[in-house]
Amino acid sequence: MDLDDLDRALLLALLERPRVGLREHARALGIARGTAQARFLRLQERGVIVGFEPQVDPEALGYDVHAFVTLHITQGRLDAVAEHLATIPEVVEAHSITGDGDLWARVVARTNAHLEHVVQGIIGTPGVERTRTEIALTERVAHRVLPLVRALPRGRRGT
Image (cartoon, rainbow, N blue to C red; front, side):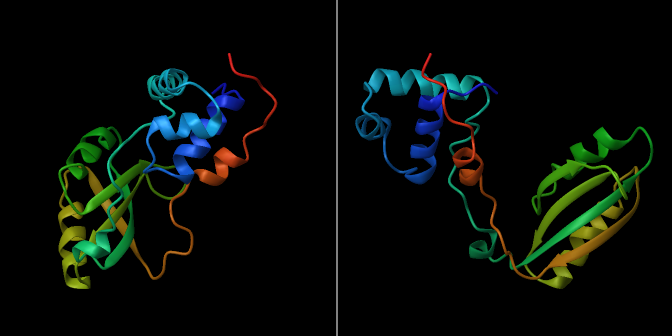
């Protein structure tokens, strides 16, 4: 991805103060609102900015148990298993992986008994050969991208 200094500055502004509108960000950056809007739209179109939904903490909804499930999948069934996982509300993300296993899923549950129920549902998915579940104790580093944007190389001027 080829971002210039203005793209980087706008991303930083959006990440550091996400509730502020583009007009205020444009003013703080010393650019026209139309320029900020055009850059924002371009970042969306290029897939740099990908969402607008609020971040919701599953614990605040009563899902106090967080776990990581590694799935071993029958060859040729990865897509079908992933499609099925997308129908399970407690599966909050899933990734194809290398190493020991084929798919990694982050799962939330209300209790350990609920987690067992969710995992049993995953195990019953056609194409799942076996799973390994690890329960998270404490989140030590929350999902973040701001440090990545801060670490982007500087020096390119707006185009």
